[in-house]
Image (cartoon, rainbow, N blue to C red; front, side):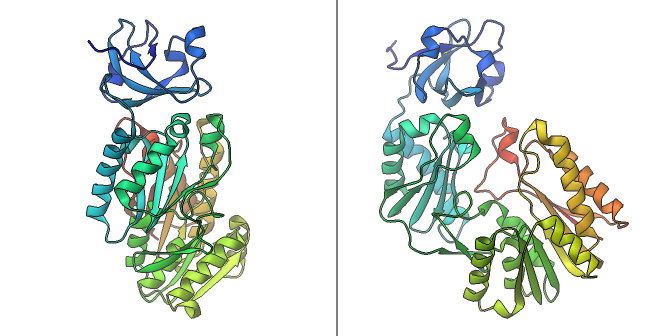
Length: 398
């Protein structure tokens, strides 16, 4: 047997390897032998994972400071994680996106679900934005970027170092231009017939949320000739998609003035600025104020940030989702539609649906749930990792 160039880490004797053999991608700190030798491994070290009987389970990325101490990279413990290994993973992900989407605007790598744990790559035409959210990604970053350019032909690669995950991995928060030149202005992104303006250097996350694409499309089908309210709109997500589908008027609400400015620029690019309006403010305050003003809309959609990003915040988060649904339902015209979304992986679909339905009931409204939506196929779900299926969208007819 050829000796591996990688160090070995091992499961504790009482830890069953079955879940890992069946595809579970994470190994936690309380499942591993963490002796002095193991603790001395540098963050991002690639190691061979063995069960307690010294049978190899595969190659993992090791992070001693993280609760997720090992992330599965390859079930073949004899593999070599090098530029070619990265190129194969990128090429496989790229081939699927190119088959599905007409333009090169999508999430190219969705972490564990695309076999590159802790790595997110969004593509905006000739520009790619990488979020290396795990220590091993920083270690292989130069090879990753070279393979990315080879596979996709992008001419600019940006590193976005924001996000809670990097902090948990003990990584810095410094953005960087890795290839080419950073764009000097927001980038136009076509999606669902709309045009979105993405700030790739100063916006949230990588600059645009591709995950809502199919839910934007569903909302657009409800919106022809009617008035739309889009709350937590960011750069005009639902509002611009509904305008592109023929909405009479769309009002976008967000707490960020820069995001609303980008939304207005998108509407102008579409030639629909006369049917588009923005309102800056706290979403709860604006929803309350609109109710007091007697405003009514045929379609209301709320897409808030993660109110329940972890188990500790679950109960408070569910109360917030309930309150959003209540305030929003009060603004829906008779026989209109309400869409509510959650990107909190801690709030599963049943809990989120129950909270939303309670809020609708508290508003004195009722009606069937007509559609349940999820993230698009460029955000695939890892079958053994519920966290990768975080996005839920519920549409009711009230």
